[in-house]
Length: 597
Image (cartoon, rainbow, N blue to C red; front, side, top):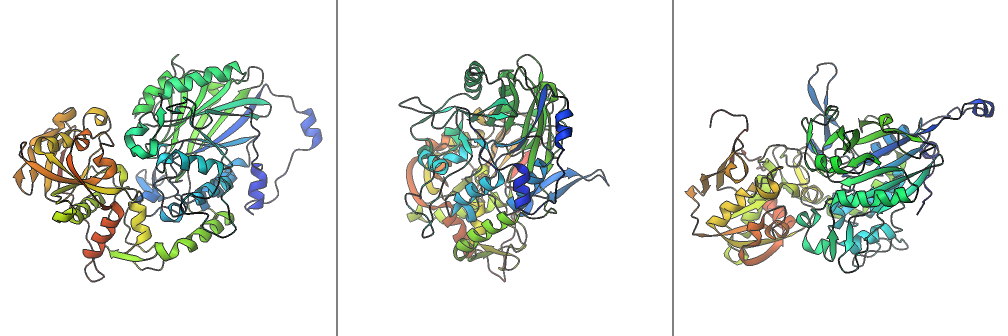
């Protein structure tokens, strides 16, 4: 179905926010005498993986790596926050003949408390104000199940928590959620629209949205209950053919799946043939119908603006704007007015940092202040103290300081016999959503950890579980970090203190785990012995590619991951004796290129 964009023009939005002065418009005579072009210019502005980060992300999670032009060295630049993102997008639209704002999923879910406490309604409102037109669905949009996703699209009060304020009713998203490859298991019908079609200066353009096929492996079973996830390539090619049959020849794919660039700097050049990027998106892009003129991606939280060859070997733009609103991608392209196609050589893509040096958008400040005030009694409660930054999400090491703290908290909370008798605990790295930052975010004082800050780190409130694993299964668990579905992109679990081993990246697959090095409290792990192992319910159920966990027995369900984390901070820190960052000495890593052990 052809849809008309209801968003106000870019100029009107910017003027309403008070961010620009008068803009000169061409005279009627100039317009009349201008030669009519055979192509029209279209600007796409793209974001992904916002994860409800309305306020600027704290610590290293709120920076972008770039090259300092003065020194030529990489530096970390503060970035993100929707007050700044709104300004950046509005200013970017000013010179465009036409502009469409798109996204590639995970706009909500695993969100900080200011958004999550209200089931991400504040983020939906912010995205509407940003002028978002269309997005694919990410895996985190399923965190609370498909019914909640449909509510975010269609509106209505939350079935349990209501409308939060008297006289208010949530209207739902004004933008379009797309989930072409997500269908109802019984009916086979798409959960949401598979594509969205609009017009740019008389030329039809279609957007197909898909999430990663492996979503059921990284979301709780309840979140994807009753749904089927088809392959990204087959789905996009199916609907590209359908669009072409309807006369829509300009097509863009919005995919919640991504890649791994060879450099962490945001504007790294991947090379003309995409040699500088790896990961799932490479194979996907190489198989997608050439009729798709550009591919916008997400999920991996990386920044890239690459070209990857299509099935005919022709370079095609593939982009991702990192995460948390720290970047946006500007994609400039031309649409052929005769054929209705995207002129592929014309496509130019570039990522831009959302710098915090620009003026804040007043409407976003008002929105954030409103919800922050409602959340304040819960968010601002002190629960612990830290001596310095304890980095998690912003740390690229296999073993993260905050990962160790979380695993220690889980093991300690579930160690009592009546709580499960946990001897060791593991935390999945993807579940660590932020850093603990020493500098105060408000009036609480430096080094104070508030409930809101702890929630940002552990927002899922997954229930903890303790299971019995044999020593052999425990070794398998470690091996599954670097083999099977995790071989190409390892997921290194964060271990509680007492568990240590060597990870030798010179080897392949399961052999990367040096079995003889695995120790628990100084003793070798006995393959025939039984061990009580703690993890959150997602990981304990085999999520993230760890079937060894699912095979565990004698399950005991404990408190939530957030509750045990908060309790640990309270019991192990004080203003006089704040918690120090762990030493990161539990996993010895031998790098792939190393010549010594």
